[in-house]
Amino acid sequence: MGLLDGILGQLGGADIGGLAEKFGISPEIAEKAVAALGQSHAEPGDTIQGAAAKTGLDAGTLGQMAEQLGGAGGLDKL
Image 1 (cartoon, one colour):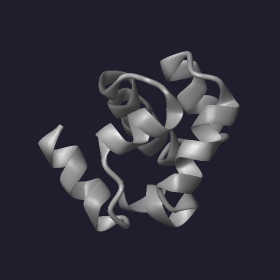
Image 2 (cartoon, helix red, strand yellow):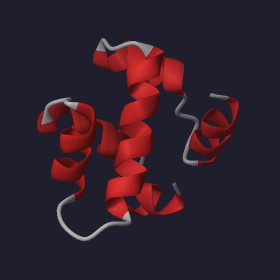
Image 3 (tube, one colour):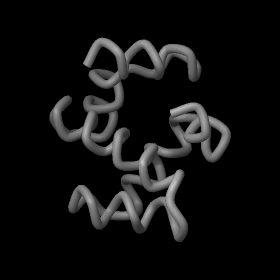
């Protein structure tokens, strides 16, 4: 998680543990969700729906996580 936490820190201080706690999920699931959001953002189609398909998390939670990470601009940095 260190590298991902470092990247998230550059996005405004978010960290995997903090995201996990905020959304009531394990740090491992939060890490997978952030990775899926970053990957899906770079692919054609809807970022949130793509990440939902990859993780099994609901789109509402992933949308809130994406906003917490800085929206599209934040996801561009992932």
